[in-house]
Amino acid sequence: MDPAKYGISSVPLKHAPYGPIVPEKLKGANKGKVAVVTGAARGIGRAISENLANSGANLAIIDLLPDPLQETKSICKKYGVTVKTYPCDVTDVARLTAILKEVEQDLGPIEILVNNAGVAPGKPQWMESFEEFWRTIEINFKSHMLTTWAVLPGMRERKSGVIVNIASRAATVDFPFSTGYNSSKCAVTRATSTLQEELDLDELDVQMYALHPGGVPTAMSSREMNPEILKKYPSLQEATPDFKNLFKDPPELCGAVAAYLAAGKAKELRGMYIDCRQDLERIQAVGREKLQKDFLYTLKIDFLEGYKNEP
Image (cartoon, rainbow, N blue to C red):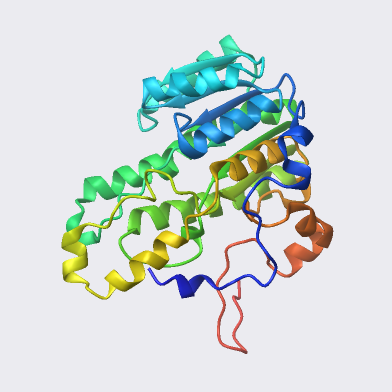
């Protein structure tokens, strides 16, 4: 991957919770609401869960790893909220669907959903079986849509709710060895904006967001590149340190932004792709009409001057 493809912001990015999203400001913002977080056992998912707990939400946390999931539960319970764990492989359609029904029986109607479960195998196509590729799609995209389909009817009935889908900068840039990851994150981002169009047509206060968590040095992102790949593509050896330097953000930043979005504090940005490192108040100050008119914070494709993306 060539880091130069991403560009450099002239406006400084945030690399820690700031202003409106510091824990003190978010305390109680989601008091009494029921929130579901997938991939909650560690890393970004744990940080999202803790920030939602700090904001007063009662939690249903889901992950394939039962022991780390219990650790997340212990951390969140310190905030005085109810936390229930549901060990599950999010590709197991029957089990995940049943869990979401259990959550409503155990805690009440689901008002916040954060789809965080994800994988990034980091293999070129010639090293990856189709089954491995498809499992990435199922974890990163299918599971997000399954949970969305399960909770949206209730949100529609109540005319309110928030769904945050953890996306990635991979949705916006091509780089090798990530066909499944890039495709799934792009699909999540586009599905988020499309569903928001439908929700707005029905004049519902149901908000959806595609959230880039920043460059978080998780177990997934910190993995060393396969020596066989480096041997075949020696030019990547020089780029590898630059790639690793992209991951410098704490998971707490994404966690705080997710809690802020869940509280309905960024309604002007609903349906959009949000980079958690950018100042949310600065973006919202531009106004939704201007952002949409200029096709900002959305996936798009451009053509040579004179050509337009005609219907």
